[in-house]
Image (cartoon, rainbow, N blue to C red; front, top):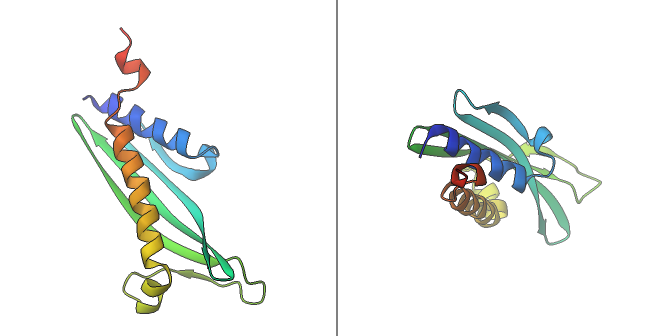
Length: 128
């Protein structure tokens, strides 16, 4: 699969996954073969809601691609008395207990969705 086609697949995934694509994507470089976006999802834990955000980068080359999920962060949005912004450090046991399973589940769902999109030809690729 060509770099152009892989890039198109990745970009289509970002566009379909995030209606506010221009605000999510920070790197959109077809020539360099890189797309990156930072986005958040909301988790509910007991009485509080939390925003958990992450950065997803996709790199494409002729015949292959790779992705990275990095920069996890969190913010308490359900408690008006203590709205703290903090990073979710994977080695902090408190953060692992608090967020680990749900964050991992969300990240795996994003990855599965991206992998499915990367294996599906775009309409432009199938047109002759």
